[in-house]
Image 1: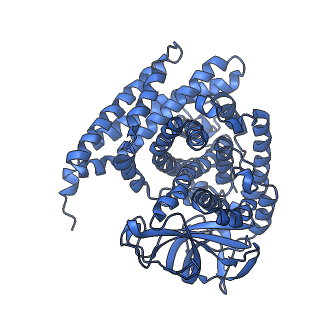
Image 2: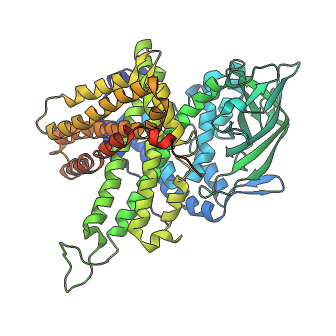
Length: 588
């Protein structure tokens, strides 16, 4: 079984030393959230994740959720852990106090999301979709619906889902077939089938609030005719109590490669009562409030699984003896610990440099997200929103892809033991494998980035981001200069790549399409380099105050700049070779 220690020291370093976004610090309601308060929250979060939720990972994998006589039953221990989870208020951490939440910013809740992803991703999914549904309802529903449903969801007594995918459509939602027929009382009868519904049914909560995309009977075809509906598992009476069961049934639970404790359901809607959320035929706009948040959270899932994979690999490397290293320190010809082998050290540093860079980038993005939601100045909010829009597909895709790399390397470090179930390492690989797929596959994310996010109605967003990087690279600092110079080399590659992409979008969309994944990774690796530059800026100033911690940061950054950042070159060179030889190939 895997072990896990929440990386609180690194999280607090970010919160105390890199919470330097002027616009974020101008948000009035967060000024009372002190580092001491955050430290207390993270300490308590570590306890529940390490002691109660971590054991659920193995339990859920060995005893998956099952459908028995029409009832979905979660794995052993889930109900007790969930009761403790909501009793301690973790569901409400980042929710609006108006509905019973604690009002913590995403600069804090993102750390909790990472811990929970490390401890048990399958368990986390029962809570995660509720928060996504909560955000969608809060932004788009009527006041009556918000007041009726949100307090129970914030409390954790009711949970939520999002129901998009159907047998006939995944990404291409314009061809969905679920129908909505309006009734005289203004409600709708929803009929159709949804598949791959995370936490679609379970025994953890009193009610499940489904957000369902469907087409009203008088709406046009395609994406322009899609509306969003709130469809509860049980009808809620006017006094807020639970009434009769709605017309929803669970057809089956998917038998999956990983996250087996999470019930991924086929749901059948048979004249189920639903309530329209947001304007008619604008359902996709409403749903993307939820989807965009989920995509960032999926990136954090990859980060969390990478962290626990790294911790267990490091511990194993310090205990396992095998072979003689070239700089052997062993006595009497005995074998060395594998951490003495250069390639094992390289692999561990690769993990560590990526993980800590990701955490720093995620912290930067969480500040931008809060500015986009809560700043008083509209222009400032919009600029932050554009940066969040640009970086969302990067965080979702790069973090989840690198999660696959890191969990695979963790298995390699463990050798044959990593391939067996006893250590729990292969489960991390299997659990993470869904993250590049759900909430929009990583290829879709890359295409979205290239064709929709680089430039929008507000201007050249990627150019604005590049200018932020340019400014930080040009800061006068003798200690930072070697790192600034190296980042500058690869920033120039990003600039050249961006110009190439923009040109190809105009005259050769296949070239741009074939290069999209490479472009996303180039932007991502440069963004991680920028995050490391900000970490180094603090580390060189503070090293005398905590020599061990900051020298560790400096040495880890050195590895990133020398060993990881140069990946930019291969992605760039590969991408600009074009797509002719790809599109002209004749498959038999």
